[in-house]
Figure 1 (tube, rainbow, N blue to C red):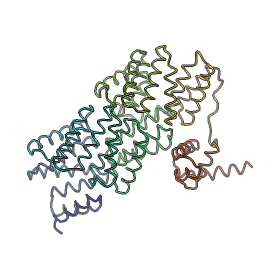
Figure 2 (figure 1 turned 90 degrees about the vertical axis):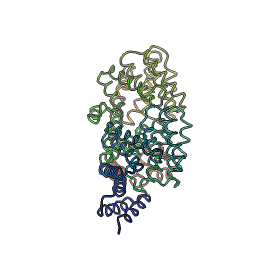
Figure 3 (figure 1 turned 135 degrees about the vertical axis):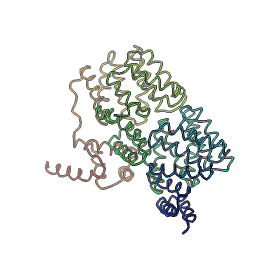
Figure 4 (figure 1 turned 180 degrees about the vertical axis):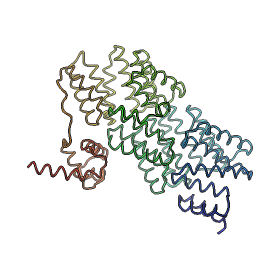
Length: 548
């Protein structure tokens, strides 16, 4: 078969998501001679099979061949791809900047073309300023409409939605993102690159807005789509996002599993992005009180911007509060104080400034966070802001009880047990001097919450306050076998191989409630996987029988 026919077959296979078929066709075409189309097609097929390093090398050769032939338009598209890949695979910012500049130069020679939309989309994704991101998104949409590229227009709309979320116009942005996701996963979009871009924009927006319910709903759809089409490169980021949801909602054993899967996937592909999973896992380790484990995870990444949160946490534990505050302030200058990107930085800055002994600056940062929360209209951010304001006011000697009570109520309603425990413990401290009995009750509840999720250091702090308030020694934590009656039921159904949804139907509970029960059962029994539940159930049944 002629090379041109094999290339056509490979391109049809790419469009259908048949990565193995595309690879075979393009490899056979290359055996006949090094054609740009075959190199480019094989690179794309290998990228979707999670071999980005080989994909980058092949597409770079395709770029050179297109340039030799004087075909600038496809070369522009590949140059944009290379810019992204040098960042994601090698964390090479210089190469990223260089390839974007090369794409721009070629565009000036070629004139407007559909590939220019991808250049705008990439520049938008890399922008820290929401205004710049919005401008690039609008430019991409205009180019897509000019050339009748409906799918690129939808990608531009999703990027615009992300920019609006970052700019605190959350509801408006989410509407655009939901629409784009419906088109991407409902069969309207056929280009897998476009589908991947829309998915990533949506998950990024949900992450920044702390909209865990929306993220979890879309994650289920993305995961099913990815599995059915073999889109391995989409898996790692999905695992990171879902791991974050599980960690926030107290399902720490499952969170570790998801983040471990993300690490494995990134290690096999986009290695430079491993820091996403490492940073999230390090945050979980700090919550668990496993400080040295967190330090080891971040080794070599201490200066990476994506690892700033857990790095600041380690600095605060090491007594480097001034360094933490200065670094956070510099980062805030880079992202801008009126962006949703500033929210996690402001929350950390409050803690750093309190550790420095500067309650005035802490109150100022907390006030800025509260203003962002008000503009964004997101409940989780509102809860974080109320906790920050309460912390700052208490440090300044002002009445903080109302703010802390509101934070506790919000975190509890949102089913964020660790954060609720933090707010409850701070409320206990605020009540300690004037209402010690009430403070003792709150401290006991905080201790129980921390024990349930496995937050050892926070549990120790709660126990210390209880002792100071005359509450006596810390009650013993639950050991293996100390399951509630409901958890015993869940364990038996787990052992029978039932899914969370099947367990929920059997026990007349919500799926989310069952997920919490499953996480607690695994944690209490020291199990890493659901598959271990059967052996644990048999063992416990035998132990119970021997007692009787």
